[in-house]
Amino acid sequence: MKIVFMGTPDFAVPALVALHAAGHEILCVYSQPPSRSGRGKQLRPSPVHAKAEELGIEVRTPKSLRNEEAQAEFAALNADVAVVAAYGLILPQAVLDAPVHGCLNIHASILPRWRGAAPIHRAVMAGDEETGVTIMQMEAGLDTGPMLNIVTTPIGSKTTGELTVELAQLGAATMVRVLADLPAFPPIRQEDEAATYAAKIDKAEARIDWARPAAEIVRHIHGLAPFPGAWFEIANGAESERVKLLLAEEAEGSGEAGTVLDDGFTIACGEQALRPLRLQRAGKPAMDLADFLRGRPVAAGTKLS
Image (cartoon, rainbow, N blue to C red; front, side, top):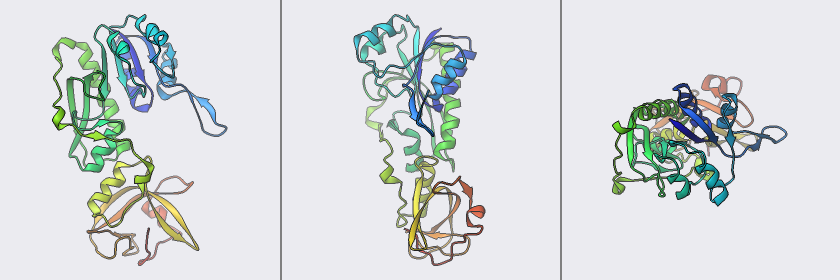
């Protein structure tokens, strides 16, 4: 098929690579404009932009698709279908209607569960047993379009970071399978009454509330790992040091919430306790618990905030 691919972050790269490898003609790639990052704040292309150039595919980076000129340029590609994966721009109706088969989106949830910006984070934080990817026909509403195919995977103790990598590969393979035999995947209407909204993660919600049950805090930690990272503060002399907690497990123990219970860094919660497994001090790389405590042990009785 003749495809326009629209995506921006690492999550979208496997789909671009898989579609290219499957022999489809990628007419053009749309991605968010390069942004300034790293030392020196130099302009850097998005992961999808960089991969497309590596594959020798034309890349377009409009700031908006709302103007008639951008819409006309898109329509002039005469695509059979547009494949969208975490692109980041709203697609006007003129863009949605331009390809012969419309625009198909790789959405990282089991729709209609978790429509919106942060479906993986919210699924983990809510304690869902499974998540997955949905291939959906895009329409004007937010992730409301009819579904062509759903593939699921268990969450277990996986973090958002781990699931993002897994779902990116799953979404790529599923999209290739759907496009190989599009008539075999008739669209099915979503049940709107079952929908939930996956709000964008606010950094303000990243601070750990030790008064919550340990099971909830562990899900909170895993849902925010690796970014923005759930965090707490620990006394460091006269000052407090912020530490990110990236991986944890429930543990036996009880005490005043936020109190370190033993030399193994078991921490009392509102119900039960938890044990950190992977942490990150400010400005330092992430490390396992043993390395974190080596040379800087945290004494039992220490109060975290």
